[in-house]
Amino acid sequence: MSLWKVIQDGSPIHAMTCDVEDYFQVSAFNDHVSRSDWENFDCRIPQNTDLILERFAANDVKATFFTLGWVAKRHPGVVRKIAAAGHEIASHGMQHTRVWQQSAAEFKQDVQDSRRLLEDTAGVPVVGYRAASWSIDERTPWAHDVLSNAGYKYSSSIYPIKHDHFGMPDAPTEPHIAGGGGILEIPASVASILGRNVPAAGGGYFRLYPLQFSLWLIRKFESPAGYPLVFYFHPWEMDPDQPRVSSASFKARFRHYLNLRKFEPRLQVLLEQFKWGRLDEIFLGKDLS
Ligand SMILES: [Zn+2]
Image (cartoon, rainbow, N blue to C red):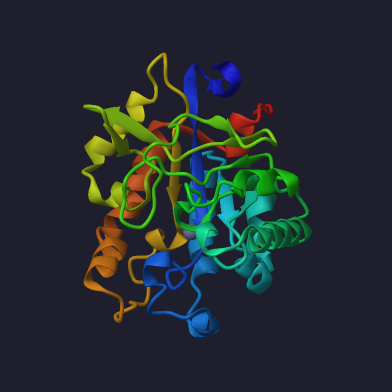
């Protein structure tokens, strides 16, 4: 499908995305950090976002930042800085509540509120949404229609893999129209290897895999039949010295802290070896300038 065949200087452009939430807000730590305590943590989003913006500017990369409403309320200057640098502002919900933990009415309120808040803060239209922890799945058949009714044009909220915390392994792996409202769902990227969907979109897998395997996965998307890859990461992955949440389970801590020191140099390799852009410009057909 030619919809997302964006080529610049002869190379395809992939989608670089960042989910703007802090280390104490990740779903894996939910059982150990209550929302009412969030105010008491040392929020490192401002300095980590500055670092990301600096790296993107140095490598001429534009990206999409799925930002929590919580962040827009506490750190409006961060949201304005991201938008002023030419990146896309999109919604990651108000407080990182998984979609399947909400009723359709609660979800509607959340996506309306976060969109309005981000638009008012950044002064730019917000048309994209990413669910906390890839939480649109079989339990939320109403989600895409709620999003299109709330004015969103795309969602990037499904991970077509099997995982203990998220995933919809039978969902389409390519971008597709979802629900009756015509909204585009752009799933986290997976590569088909020996008949299995292998995560290729970044996140913890990017820190777990050897770098050469990640590069090979991305190159698979550059075949003639390919489509742009969607890569994602978080500001706290740029911050190996972040405060530790020592009460969390061994598995949660292993996944969160694994290879944090390797993340930034690995990201730099990606920024240099591939071309990256904003989700809206790649998938909604806006001109890249
Ligand atoms: Zn998130």
